[in-house]
Amino acid sequence: MESFSPDPVALLERDDEVFSSATPTFSIYSKLSKAVVAVRQNTLRSPIKCVGTGLHTGRTITLRIEPAPADTGIIFQRTDIPGAASIPALYDHVIDTRLSTVIGDLSDKRNRVATIEHLMSALSGNGIHNARIFLDGPEVPVLDGSSADFLFLIDCAGRTQLETPRREIEILKTIRVEDGDAFTELYPSTATDMPLSMTIDFPASAIGRQTLDLTFTEASFRSELAFSRTFTNHREIAALQAAGLALGGSLDNAVVVDEDKILNPTGLRVKDEFVRHKMLDAVGDLFLAGAHIRGSFTGYKSGHNLNNQLLRALFADRNAWREVKGTGKEASASLQAA
Image 1 (cartoon, rainbow, N blue to C red):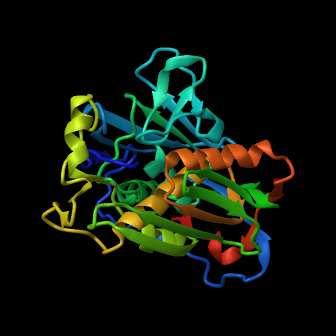
Image 2: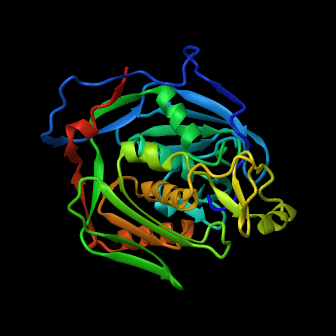
């Protein structure tokens, strides 16, 4: 998201048992092959749910994530709208990108789900390719404003490897979209893991210009991106709330800046948390390709709109990509929940 995030988790529970530790137990093969093999799809081992506050409505919303078969993809379902169709988390179902990434049923304007990017980023960062997500409201609760709580939920649910190879999209030529001096770009890469580059430049001196280059893996997502929170400028808050937006925001779940000051009592988690969060957003937005992207990504002063326009431009050019079977090192695909 590009401005605020709502209150932290109000309730977290497992349907089948009460868990007592925030640290999941994993079993790892004692000897991991370094040979290139097919990377398989994953889903959750068991359902998991939480309750949190919606960003713009301030409503309490229950989120439930359930396992799904291979090739299902990520599917959202509104349970508060009788007879509502499920909404696939795909780039061509994005209907709004002004304050967050919003997907919707193209035939029913009521049926939409906002602020999906942090959850999508966590799913991508933990290699979850198939899941059904149920909500009783119009927004994904954004919890602490990062992907960390969603990653915690996924870890608690566990991960199951499926037999079907992961779907991958190989970038064959450079695709670039621009808006003034801002741009996003995908270009070919021989790397198995996706190289990411992000640059931001904000007038507030507390943010300024920041650049981050990162190779996207499950390990790097956890250690370098997942914890980074959304942010906004203090002067924007009054206008947003006057328009009935950002009603769930607070200093507990977003970084708020006022020119050269950080208003949060606890400060930043890292000094370049701002650019890390913008990269986190991009990871979630790019997962709307419905596949792992085998290529490199660069964003310069980009946001949700340019991220989505990049995917639309990519898939509109049939010479720019091809679908391939997932391949990679076994070590990167062998973690499985106990």
